[in-house]
Image (cartoon, rainbow, N blue to C red; front, top):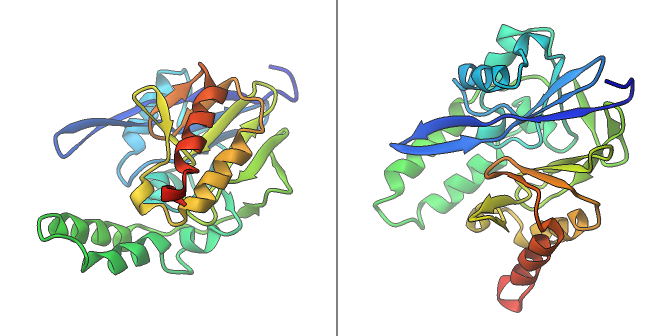
Length: 251
């Protein structure tokens, strides 16, 4: 491994939710001096992440830090457990997201869930209440260092502000391998790109503008937290998604 190289490992974390098989795709960034986990799943997911890392000949004991792209529960819910097991880990996040991860401000997602509750039909309300309780019970963790778009992370990894899904959401770009770690800026469904939960995206117009920003990068591999890896026709598939959501009915 060259001194300046950052290697990207995509972990496949498979789990069962309400009887349905699902998967998350956190990423490990590794160079000669650091090994950083990007996002860390729900509470209780550490054994699953350990297993996924082992399949790539990685050990969580080698981690030096965790980067949280935004404060959704499936991205940082397991952070406290990870930090408790490995106290020396540094916690990194975008500037805007840090107060929510550290518990200094109320979760925006919880505020959204509470505001939408009364408008829901009766059938989904028990599940919606359960989701609110999950959000209330997630353990906060102090953030050690914050990053903005003007800064780079590790050896030249670019921080890209991609608001929409959440206001402080960021994606990461590794120029050496032309890998874009999208987090929830977009997902993969049926071999096409889609906006993550468009009905619950905080600002759909911002989300579309974030897609346009991503399209300016040379991308050979797109890693989506939901859906995995896309390596074929990335530019064309991004263009189709942008076109679909840029129609007047969506903005």
